[in-house]
Amino acid sequence: MSTNTLQQQLLEAGVHFGHLRKKWNPKMLPYIFSEKKGIHIIDLNKTVVGLEEAAAAMKQIAKSGKKILFVATKKQAKEIVMECAQKVNMPYVTERWLGGMLTNFQTIRKSVKKMHSIEKMLEDGSISINKKERLTLTRDKTKMEKVLGGIANMNRTPQAVFIVDISFEEIALAESRKLDLTTFGMVDTNSDPNKVDFAIPSNDDATKSIAIIANYLTAAIVEGLKEREADKDKEEAQEKAAKAATKTETKVQAPTEAVDNKAVKVEVSKEATTTEAPLTSEAQGIKAQEAQEAKPEPEVVERPADDFKKIEGIGPKINQIMIDGGVTTYAAMAYAKPEQLKDILAAAGNRYKMHDPTTWPQQAKLAEEGKWDELKTLQDELNGGKKA
Image (cartoon, rainbow, N blue to C red):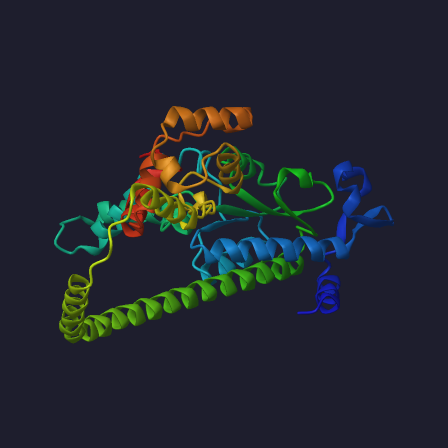
């Protein structure tokens, strides 16, 4: 989609309408185009730039296999955000944000497990439940599904959070920032764009505006998921080709070994027949020096830094902090002590002191050994890098 076409669609959807001047946040000044009849008009050029940057970042997160949590509890955004999240199989919250849904994720998971146990109890016909008990359980299940249904399949904290109206969802934003998650948000003229990593200046009250922004980002996530599947298919094809090549090599090497052994015997017999004159000590020293000078020096190959974002509890910022602190590979992190990692986090600022790197060396060891299935199983049992 070209920039002009996107701008025209945003204009028709009313994305450029902001709030009244008396409600504005001065930090939104760079994103305001003008004022008309006491209402601020958002610069759609800045909206397009922010939207494209956010879409590119979401595409990469989806391609890496991480989850993005959609948050929108406003009445006009609930259904739109729910449909978009379900389309890409991402978790969502559209009814009520429970306090501690991210920072106290372990307790939230207990509530989700309770909901699943009630579902099994109602579906299992072998358990005898009277009419009153069944009615009570059905009501509890409906109530819990309404609040927790969108995160029922979210086994660990997400990599990023997309929020519609960051002023309205201030608790969700605060928890996301506390856990150092990547934050995306629709920011109106009454909000602070510096509170999110990827701000999309837009009208967060109109249904059409929310729909066009959410659908654009959802399309980017779909592209990322397709690329991930294509990469997996390509890797599987390469593995099959490599296995086939090794099989053919072993078949070819078996009959040629006998020929090589005969050739070695002939060469040994020739060397035995030809005798060389013994070298003097001075000649031997010169020959050894020439051989040492002719020996090439080994090349030092620098290993590129590993992607620590694959470790539960590490986001893009902490990934860079670890690299700047000298921990650049999975092996280095695997043999590092949690106290050393805590010192690196503390040196980066007070904001990062609350992170617990206790399980990071264990995860890094599995990543270094290429045991990705075991790493995923371990991460399902962890909560943001902490033991559940």
